Length: 387
Image 1: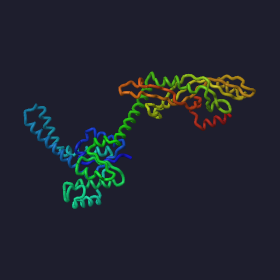
Image 2 (image 1 turned 30 degrees about the horizontal axis):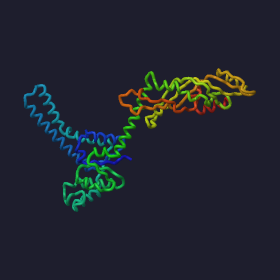
Image 3 (image 1 turned 90 degrees about the horizontal axis):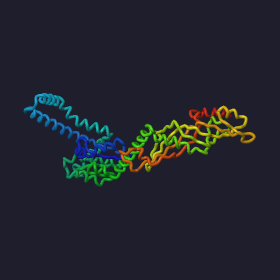
């Protein structure tokens, strides 16, 4: 569940274009769905009204300064440009003023901010407190506190069923919500960002980003020549298969099983970066596949020796009824490459130098390359026909 956050008008006012790191971080947390910002309708309207007023004041000041400048001895080419600019600002004055509010609306949409409407019941409760001097009014009939009274009622409703965080530097309103159940208060965004819950999210997210970036770096490292990851797999990818057995549909014999007694290097190495994963302690596991020539042994009845000859293998008597066959077979090998990186890896370090250890973590049972693309049904059919 995302952390629910409500910002008071005073917080938006403190950085009205949201250029500070606090708002940038908050926006990132919203986009990653770790935080859900909610804005009371009263706060939205109050801040938009302030934006309109600020913009109108700025535009009026610019027009006044521009006219004053134009009356002085400035270069002729600049005077012409200034006259054009002042004329365009005059014709588009309302558009310029509205741009501040539009920018805010775009931010709300981009961050998925949820608007909290003021219900009739909440408005009535606020007016009751207006006449009685209830929270957050400083006294009965204190008109300046009416907007805060509506915000207060919205907060109470939002906190009925789940915890919320309220960021507000208005001392009066802050003091009124301080003891309300399910409401945690901070005076500014930096206090919110520094809280234990948010720090835990950021730390975890940054670690995840680092993991993702390192996986991408490993993938990039494996795409250039010489490829140290592929070279390692080529040399060591088949070692663990020595003295093991496997089955494959095209192996002659009743059980379709063979014994590996000698291995070579692998080629046609491929990595499955979509299946790569971080396992903690700077250890990554990357699935790989490759092909290699292996010496295998299997046993077939004497009357099936033509199958061995057809495959180019040799054989010798094992007993009165069975022969031992030997052949060089191309096997398709799959496994997991384990890569441990240095804990002291810095952004500017060469990734190849940060690899402390590589090993073949595990291997799947291989199959003959000729059987690699057989479907399960084809494997079953081949087995039943040859039996």
